[in-house]
Amino acid sequence: MTKNIDSLTDPSQLLELAEELEDNDQLTEALQAVEKAIKLDPQNGKAWCSKASILQDMDQPGEAFRVLTQACKDLPNNLDCLFNLGAFLSEHGNVSQACGCFDKINKLDPNYPKIKVHLGNAFLKLALWPQAIECLGEALQTELGPMDKARVLNHIGEAHMNNLDPEKPEENKRELEKAKEYFDQSLELNPDDYIPVGNMAMTFCRLGEPEAALKVLEPALAKFPTQARLYVMQGITLSLIEGRQKEALAAFDKAIELAPDNPDLWFHKAHYYVRRQDFGQAAEIFEEGLRKHPESGELHLQYGSLLRHMQRIPESVQHHRQGLKLLGRLVHWGFFFVDENNKPVEGTNIAIESDRLIPREKIAEQYFKQLQAQGHTVDKDGKVDGKYRVGMTEVPEERLTYSENLRELK
Image 1 (cartoon, rainbow, N blue to C red):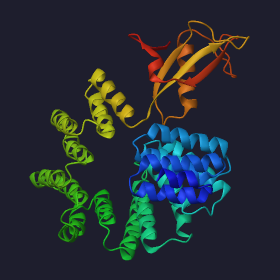
Image 2 (cartoon, helix red, strand yellow):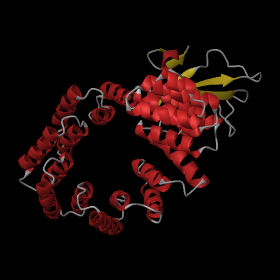
Image 3 (cartoon, one colour):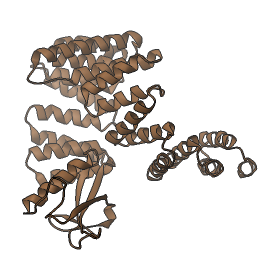
Image 4 (cartoon, helix red, strand yellow):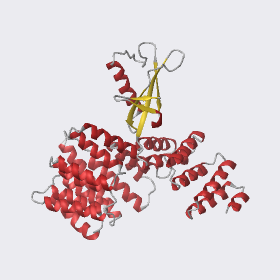
């Protein structure tokens, strides 16, 4: 196969060969073909995206991210590279930055295939409900197949279902009724999709009608007896009805039995006890879930939140940090003073750990508040003590040393 790669000089033929090799799990050879295509045509965005895809198949996500980032830098007008970077970021939990990629594409070319769908889904993941409703509504006006349209309708329903304000009960009721309408439309297009059924049941629960939710779930459970999500919804619904708590727990256990590899199910079972203020039992469920799924970043984050509520702060911090790390969202922002000669001031280095989804401006704002609390002055331009500027950069963890109270840069 290497002979074939050596004999080809047309980038498009090399990419076709790479695709064939990738499909046959000949990843090393596929990478060789793509790299030759890039060498022949460095402006070929498809080749860069193909290289990133192969690297992910080779379990090298860090290198794939580097390739996509470099491609977007070298080919700033190539929307395919930008889209693939957004898709990568979304897949690895960096939804905020993914949203930035999709938003840029939408502004440059609103007719880019399914871009409004992807942007709307990113808004949904970020809990930006009004933006999700608007963007996904625009997506409905584009060319979509019946299944894609059904999914978009379901997502709009999800946004309405969550677009609630505790201070506005009447508006909330209207939002929930809208959600039901969208779930109905989704099911009309695709009656074999159990997800809007579960969402419909949740909507009834939020309307204070758990019995109506059960009526929605019963035929769905008969039709889809192996779908763990439906049993979760059944458990949540039964937990709202007095005298049916044992049935609720049985439903959560059934969901875990059907999908033992899904760590999210342990959260739902734990949350059953959280709602009953039985935090000790909830903690035991989280711990059992983490013994089975130690690599679940979300489970660590959720357990960390519970521990913080229980005032078990050191353990909470540990789980929160581990969760961010597993999700690829743990970032260290390095800060340092810069003098009038643009040189870092010795002894002023500090690093602040953060969730990557928090905008860097917010982290800088936190740092300035720390400086002011320590007696420094910070003017409206961000100048410290009237003579220093502040530098900020992302720092690899291996460049940090640890002290009792803060993380310092080497």
